Length: 158
Ligand SMILES: [Zn+2]
Image 1: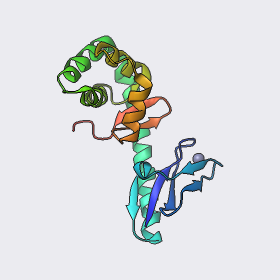
Image 2: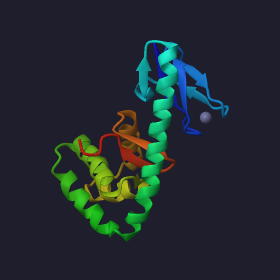
Image 3: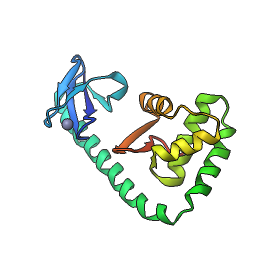
């Protein structure tokens, strides 16, 4: 079994045999192969080449989305966005569901959101643990980080 992982340092996709615990990126970073972080799984090394290309294209897409998102974002009244997101997330159920709803709604509204966006929304939900919440969202693959410090729900409309 082979899989594709993304280097947390240079954000490049890399193929790896899933029996391995770590793999060295071409940038020199030692990537830990965590099951939750594997983007694609394939059976053969030949399929792996394609899978790496696919994930690379997805990463490039995330970056393009991020760049597109910056323009309209400046025009949007971000304070209103935070209030709207918080209002939706409040109705999502328990704490974990509220945090997920906040991330999904922020992605719907802003395409990509920052730590500060999440902090503002969670604060109005009475949740002060921003780092823990973000860690949990990343670990559960609810959000990914298309660019350092910017986050996006994996399936924004879900
Ligand atoms: Zn790297």
